[in-house]
Image 1 (cartoon, rainbow, N blue to C red):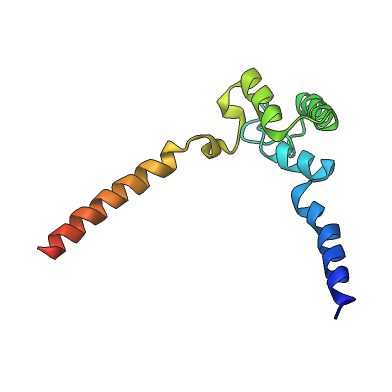
Image 2 (tube, rainbow, N blue to C red):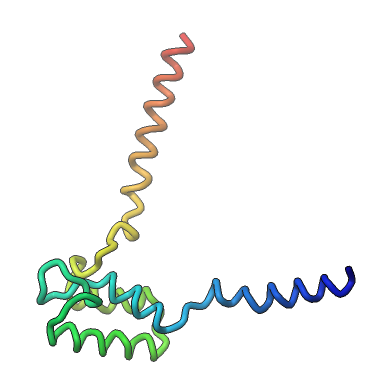
Length: 117
């Protein structure tokens, strides 16, 4: 049993970085699938066959290799092409989550008070 505890701790230490640090290729794939090609209609950089998208993929790869965070990369592309380039804009609008929850809570309170009377 005493030999098992260090083995478990060592296994946890080896496996833990996998969950916290993405490799550059998976980051590249994730980001290229979340950036729309400004030339093609409705295609992401990952799927686009245009030469302009090839150039954008090169810039994206350089940004990842230079150690920029995902937020810095998305801020760069958003400042250059606008909010429409992001395929996942709902991450930035917290009000879209909070407002329906707030309304639901108010209706629940009104319903509860009506039943209580």
